[in-house]
Length: 312
Image 1: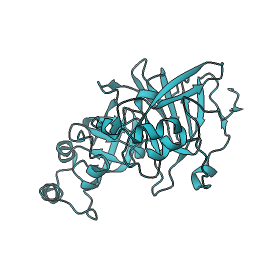
Image 2 (image 1 turned 180 degrees about the vertical axis):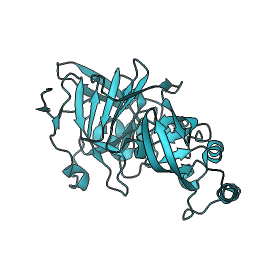
Image 3 (image 1 turned 90 degrees about the horizontal axis):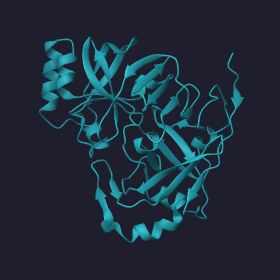
Image 4 (image 1 turned 120 degrees about the vertical axis):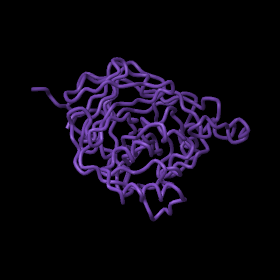
């Protein structure tokens, strides 16, 4: 039997930065960052996370100093907003704010084109890994920045354990379903899944609270109920009100041999999704697998072997 032990919450170090003198109020987030028992022994490092306290609670958040950062496999860059930079990289703050002309769009966020500092992750064996951070003037909702795939791919694999609320860097392979994983030129990861027997490619996106289908596949995968299809076409032909979501309940969605019953999918052309992902412009090209697929499960993105693992 594998022995569990109480892991130590690691001390976060930063290169060329210091914390600013400012108070932070105790929030519901902070109450959930605590020491936890973990079954993961042979790994580089482990951090606790919490789920955001909006409804539904679906985004994994870690706390560094007084900043809350989203673990987002749907983003290809690690960055902080103004509050996060002030807290974590204060030495860079005034310089970046005085050079806003260097902030350019990278297709996802408006990014300052120079690194503002590093997050140094210490390991249990005395080693470390430096993760570069960038500044974004994107208005992050409910958190202060994101940790994206450029960080995660610095390791052979990551485990995001939604049962125990832990992220594990370079852990051993977990038991469960293994699905081949495609990594695109931006470093984002995709797997095959199916809706009502129709195969589709989906982005593994821990930063999304939804299951989102691109428009053409959405229509293809709905049961061919004339009224449903006509409603979708009509809603797509005009600007849908925010109070009028476009969604559909699928009787069965599968990833490998794991089956999800009565799962609600949203349509990529839903303006609420467009506003949340307005800079991406990629939702028409593929679908998005968000929190409904990961809730109460353990997932592992194995970059070295290009395999996605998921355990119930």
